[in-house]
Length: 229
Length: 229
Image (cartoon, rainbow over all chains, first blue to last red; front, side, top):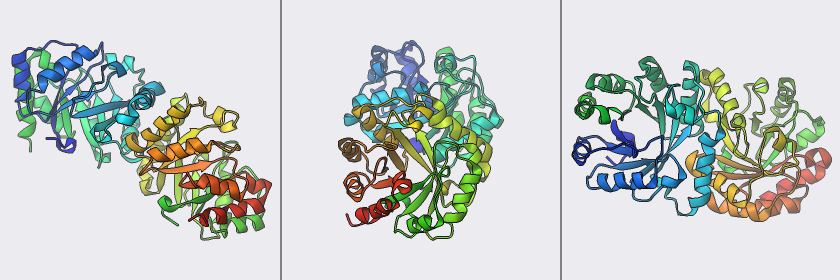
């Protein structure tokens, strides 16, 4: 489970949302491959530390997806660093990351750090506006995936539809051009069927919002994906 | 010589400048590890093809450093793709590259393609203004080098002082944080002594302008670097 390359299912928890200890235990013991802590709005160090402490009670790997410099803390197994490929602003591509490395470069453990080549594909999402994105067409997304794999040798290419179920045909086509880089899919998975369908194309699916809307459905997505093998 | 990782000395020819057949023969037979064809101003397909045809008569590897989409052509041994890390504009970091991959991704040979993490360090240089750069301080440059090595796994980190002799102490410090990524240095090398001094820190030095100003000095830089071993 500590090899990111083998992950197929991940739950993403938002430090800015409430979750009961009982639900958290169910998620951590569900058989998912990892828990990612990450969000767009008001991610604070307190919120991140609270989730870290609560998830650390279980054996599941726990990842911090870095949203801002203020909420970075040691203690996670891995750190995922988003590089927003379809942003209009270099800030979201590499400048924030550059600032972090300038500050912490001496003490960073590069083995724990994974760059995610992000493509945010829902123009109504907060993350889309926040990261000043433009909406790429089919060919643009394919080209971003190829850049992630061949130019930047990124471990992860992340298609993020935040809150809406994405375009399966596009996910399938992207998978065709990736070999070393793992394809992560996130957005709008609310049922075992959707999980299974998207997992037919992506290497790993991320289940987020449904955790807060319908924990039972969320939990069922794990088995749906793992049974697919 | 066809392994970029072993290169120590390279001549860079500007397709927009004149060079006689006699001088070109001397450069190609000098013992340099490669000839890079590249420039900032008015690089045209005609200029690139002219140099390609003339250099191809010799056995030295020949590289196209891509300046714009219009002047890309097959026939080179390698293609170097600049990613200007200290540009303010995402265009020079990855958008032009994205456009090229969108257009030619299907037919590209990724083995021939090398991304150079460029840091342009002379604020009076045309390339600096052209690529909308900001002048990084010492710590910024170290952090860019670490990004090149660890985040983007780039084969080359290129410190470009275009026309002026650079800061040896900075080049030395950058070398300390690079392991897999090769350190290329370019700018203001006009004599064997300068070549030898900069090569003490950088893995590979690029000799350009002096070719057009003083061919004899230019040729002497090869021996100066190779004797250093």
